[in-house]
Image (tube, rainbow, N blue to C red; front, side, top):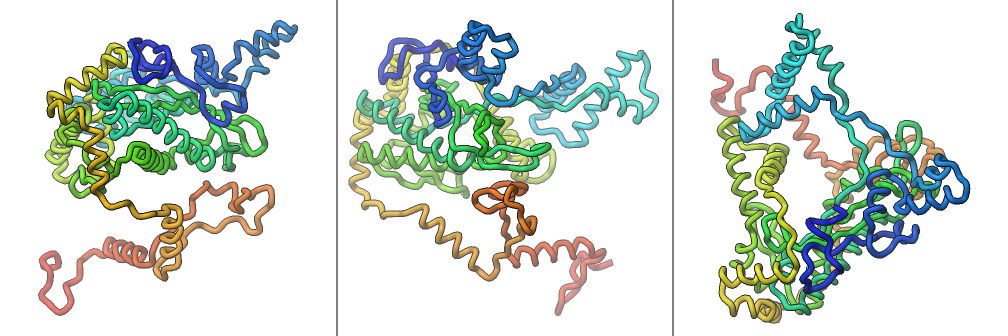
Length: 496
């Protein structure tokens, strides 16, 4: 990540003959508080994300040693919060089982069932038992004890979180616009990303405290992050995006550096994504005089917002990666339906789409300079449409915006509050959040009045009609014979 997708470029520019991508830069309130700014060095990356130390640990340790401190004292001065936990690596049997499961998933082109996974695990363990003891296990209990002793928890120390900020609309404008348009797009991307990260700093950071980490507290606003700008996808399509690598080091309410409780961050990633998408479109439309429109990309699913007036042939020309993923996903869906005799449920859909993404992922390409990428994208765009369509892309989109009525003024925050108030005021709405500790001790209460033993934002609601439907389903499940329909002939299921 420190080197990007290829060799490091010289600086952030709208035109460059240097192969590779720009170097990473520091970002976040926590980074500013530590005096970190500008380009990220390899030594800083290694110290923070590799060892969990202060980014300038090498300089700090050298200064301490020069002052007569011991090595232990120098390393303590360079620490940034608790040391990284030393978690066990996968055992040889763990790795062998994982390889067997991966090969099996590849052969059947679908996720394995629980029974299939268990069977393969036990067969692999039996082979390992015979290789070690030169005999077969006496029974399943002996094999189970062997498996438990030779495998362990598959845990890893988390040293960073990679958040990706990308936009198809910004990518098209960057790829086919002139130098002025590209500069605006880069500024919009940076501003939308900065606003989104500021929201994350204020709303999505928490730490765990207490014995066993049972209490959850709000962290001080501020992330320690590095930002890397990339221009293309693995398929060579224009995909302007930024990788933001967030350190798990944050300050707790007591001002001490602690490890980030990722539950809140990962839960709010979707909200942050929607905020970035909204702000990037608002900013670029305001700067370039464009407008957005709703487009149904997948039938039956929520429409997406796109810039009006862009020729759909241009989008298709730069959709190699997404097309490959969709084609593979459709194949996996068909295999699932043939094997199970039903449509995949939502969890299975997510797993199959992830599998399709991994299977179609091409190897990383050799680093190219930005000027070569721009020339290649223009050539492909002209081949898919014509020279006039490409040259007038911005003018056509601006004309489409002029032909549309001005957008209505909409306060999203106020609308969200109004919708929430209406739902909660409805007589069918029920708060099913478990009651907290009463009376609450002052040391066990967050500034917002909630208990530290309850996860942030965990208040839960349902409706009386939904609870009644669940009761009917449970009652039906406990009924041995389906009763006949009232006022009519017995149903086929109730006949002997």
